[in-house]
Image 1 (cartoon, rainbow, N blue to C red):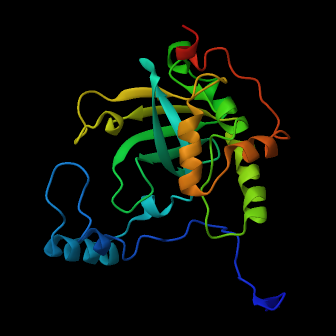
Image 2: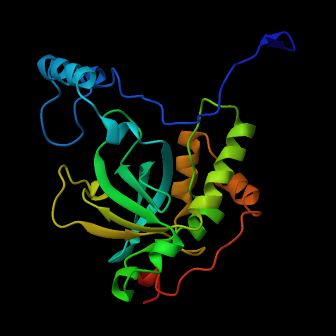
Length: 244
């Protein structure tokens, strides 16, 4: 099919998680890791490539969303770190995300995040609730994005806004294990609790603009497009680290 004499790109909106892992391990031969250690050898790459064919990676293949945003360290709110979330849905109340320092094949796993519904959050004891953060500002500011360079922008924006309408209601608990922002070559020390931003003046939007340039996103346009997303009430125990 053509449009204005040009071939029309055929596409389908994703309905299920795509199995994108076959063949990715062999690309590590020349890349190696960005931390300590030698580059991946041909022997190791062949072993990994064979494993990707003969073994089952169902938990990883259930990953169906890539989110990008910035976190602040709970004990040092002036430190921020860009984070790529690769998330799967466990059930209707719980999501889990693997956190990486980039979307590349040799990205470093730097943390984990769990997201739960308000109904489940209400069941937690007060001390536990204070470890969790909201996603309202992250969504409404346009900071949280789902990078996309495949599907045309208009239908993707519609799908993304629908997803944001769900995420805005969720509470998250996040630990970073590898402090790559300070140059650590390995995961050192204890896991670090991190939190989301909650108001203007907290995040450095110059970093967000740099992210937008790399991913082809625009937080300002997304902020405007999300004005119609209902803003839920935030539980008084959430976002405690911003409350002193």
